[in-house]
Length: 180
Image 1 (tube, rainbow, N blue to C red):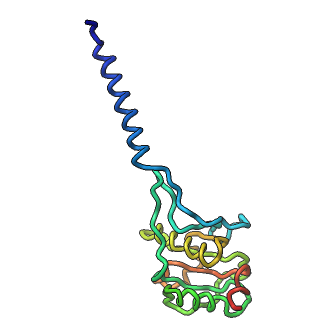
Image 2 (tube, rainbow, N blue to C red):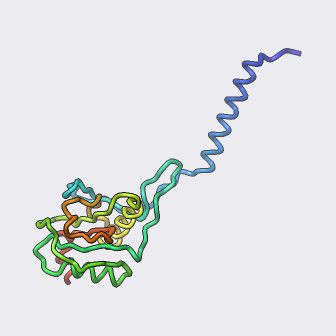
Image 3 (tube, rainbow, N blue to C red):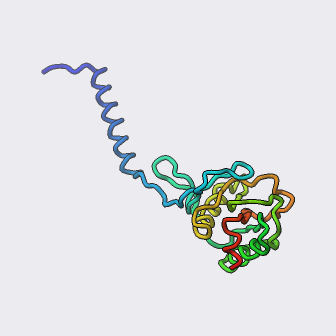
């Protein structure tokens, strides 16, 4: 009977374990992609470097794992009017509150005017992933996925209550639609 070199035998066993482990991982974590809304159509960026996009879940991680699921009620926000269309932010606030969202303060004018594309800012920090998911949900369900989403720009700090996790700045793209 022929003898097998111990070194070669060990290498064969290690290779077999690595291959079987890779197969087990691939079957245990299927590559799934969450449904997301379309990105902003303009490709432009707003104050603070915001960009379009958003969906109902966070980014896809290794093995198809997703971020937090969006809350569809109870999210605190403030609506700001970034246009000259009077009442657009108040109309948005009224609509979101009727759907279960919470606004700790009445809608008001944005410190930035002439906003062309609606902006949805989320607070960063410990709850940033959840806040981003919530912003994505609002973008998809209320703005057809065309609003721009980004981290809260410090420029808005003087007018945004601490309790608000989202700031929605109504732009010219939706101002007229909201007051009809």
